[in-house]
Length: 166
Image (cartoon, rainbow, N blue to C red; front, side, top):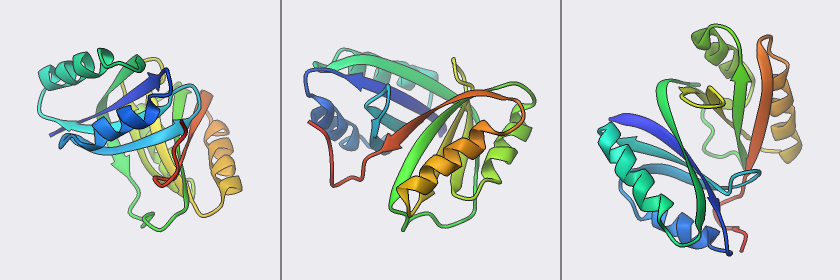
């Protein structure tokens, strides 16, 4: 199973509709409505690049989807800590220089960082953070920015599942 990520930007108030379509799919491991440049981030488990391309074509042609950015993953690492009961989460896109394996390890040393993935595209790394306090999510993002070799980050704050914007 190959893991990939997609960022979706919606239009016309269709974020909930697109989000529901993602949750109906067996190949979507996780999908989250976010606040930031993108409206939704989804983690996909697909067998092949052809399946990824089919996913892209399907969602790129949906009414209400403005942009689909596919982020193929070639390496990912997870933290062994249990983050299931945390109240807030964020996805952090990272542009960095240096050894990618070392960068993933440095990100995972930050308290609250659950996973980090090396992705193909503009950003290079996608990290997933959790915490009980919204302020601490911001602190996690700032710590990621402070890592030597990190050029810039973009944080996508995730909305809890029971709340979605119209």
